[in-house]
Structure formats: C-alpha cells, structure tokens
Amino acid sequence: MSTFHRGLTTKAMLAIAPALLFAPAGVLAQASNTQAKAAQSTSSEKGERWLHVRVICSDGKGDTVRVNVPLELAEKVLPAVNHDRLHNGKVRIDNSEINDVDLRTVMEAVRSAKDGEYVTVQGDANDVRVAKEGNHLIVHVVDKGRSKKSQVEVKVPMKVVEALLSAGKDELDLVAALHALSTQGDVELVSVKDSENTVKVWLDSKNVAD
Amino acid sequence: MVLLAKAALGLGGALVAVGAYTFHEGVIRVDVDEFRAGGSHVHMWVPAAVVPMTMHFVPKHNLCDAARDAREFLPVAHALFKELEKFPDAELVEVKDGEQHARIRTQGGKLQIDVDDPNEKVHVLVPLSTVDDIVGQLEDSAPGA
Image 1 (tube, each protein chain N blue to C red):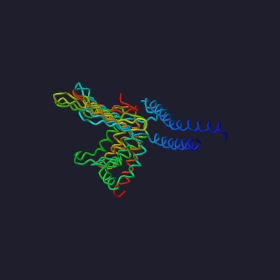
Image 2: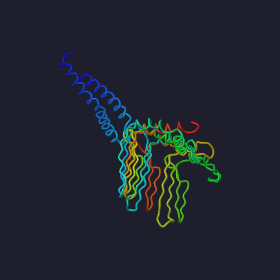
Image 3: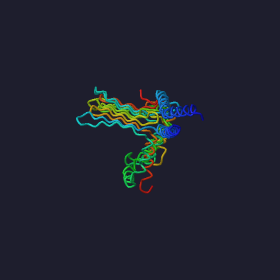
Image 4: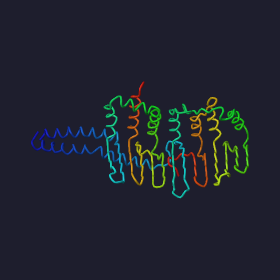
C-alpha cells in the first residue's frame, strides 16, 4: 500500500469511527420523532376499549382527578391482585350482606322481563328509580335529604350484570364483567353530581379523557 | 499511524456497540428540584441497561428482604408493566389539587411520572421493560421462588 493510500485509509478510518459513534444518537432521535407522532393519536388503533374516570371538584380551585385504563389491561392485571376479599378477579361477598337475597334469581327475573320501571321510591330524603331500558339496568337516585342536593345515575349493560353474577355463589366475577364490558359500545356508566363534585365513569375507544 | 487508525476504529466499533445497546435499552431519567434553602437538585441520566446488571451485584439477602416486603405487589406489578408495553401512549392518571399537579403516563415505551408542587418538582422517566426486569429479578429473589 502506497504512503498516499495508507494515509487516505487512516484518515477515512478516523473519520468513520466518530461517525459510527454518533449514529445511534441519530437513530434514537428518529425513533423519538416517530414515537412522538404515534403518541399524538388519541383513538386506539387496535380497537382497545378504555375505561375513564373523571372527578371534578367544583370548589373553584379546579381540582380534578382523571384516570384512563385500558379494559384489557385491567382484565389481565386484576387476577394478579390477591387482597382481602379479592382473589383471582373475583370478590367474595358475605351472605349476610345481601340479607339472604338470591341475586342470581333476581337478575334472571329482571333479564327475562320486558323494559320498564321496576322500583320507584319518592320520599322526603330520596327519590330512587330502578329501571330496565334497552338491555341496560338503570339506577337513578336523587338525594334530597342533605343540605346540598346530589344526583347519582348508574347505567350498566345487562350482559355485564350477568357476567358479574356468573361466578360461584357469594362471588362477583369482576374479570368476566370487564370482559363483557369490552364488547359494549361507548357508554356512560356512572354519573354523580352534587354541589361539590362531579364524577363520571365511562367507556370508549379513546386513550385520553375529554 | 495505521496502528492508531486501527485502534480508533476498534474503539469506535466497541463504543458503537455499547452505544447502540444503551440506546436500545433506553435511558432512566430522574430530575428532582426542591425549592427551599439547602434543597437538593438531582438531575440524573442512567442507561437503563445498567440497572438490571447492577442488580446482580446487590447482596442476595438485601434482594430477598425487598422481595419479601413487596411480595404481595410483585405479581400485580409484573402483570401491569408487562401489559402496559402493549398499549399505545396514554395518560393513565392525572391529579390536580390546587397548585399540585401529578401525572403518570406512558410515552414511547417508558413510564413517565411528573409531580409539580410549589415546593418541589419530581420528574421520572423509566423504560417499562427495565421496571419489568427489576420486578422479575425481585420475584426470582423471593424466598421459596
């Protein structure tokens, strides 16, 4: 190898070495850019279902809590939680707590019944309404007893209620309920409004809360 | 001169391999700023690949103690971090309380925790795979594992 070529090769090697050294940084920057673009998407591409919880305090400070959880994630993680009455995604309920009411029989009766209003209580303290509308179980409570009026509305698809009660006796199957929930369309499950807080629990395909 | 060039290329190649591995595994970033007299300011960037390797040098009885203390939460953490990697970036939790603001979200395969408070700011960015590795090693160190 001539002196000229040797010098040229040496210089080339010295130039390539730092270039190679900084190559991963460039690749990383590109990857970060791609990730940033991907992150801008709000609607889940794979059709994942997201459970959202939003609590807004109306005390003027604008205190808020927002939780966004993919249902599939909750389905996978819940069976790993073994604490107190929650084991393998099922919650054990004491028979005494439900006063010997056979929940399964009651739900079967509600499921096979036509749409309608099942319970209506109008009192000085509370107004309670339990109804079945379009395959949804609806519970509506207006608390008038307190100095500040509050309103609770729960709307649960019947399939979810059935799944919840699909476990053995004295057990609620939360994982089955979550799985049933994932097959439902966008729905507002819980809404609580009072003078201090607004709570909303809903299901949709977006990975961000509105 | 040729020897120097070969050494530079060898060193460059090795650094590229190390750099590529480090960047592939990601970086753990920790920023803590305390806004008070004598408050600490910690700004740390650590290659994520180093952490699971370092865990091998932690005395076994210390890992065993940590695993015993966290035994109840390890399966949950393992399932959570393993699954989180499969989902798109999302803001999982956001809490605003007066001037305090806390946020937990996933971004580009990393778990990002931001706490902004008038007295301190804490920002942590850690690859989900690293957290999963650590949890896995703790599970393996648990008594009876």
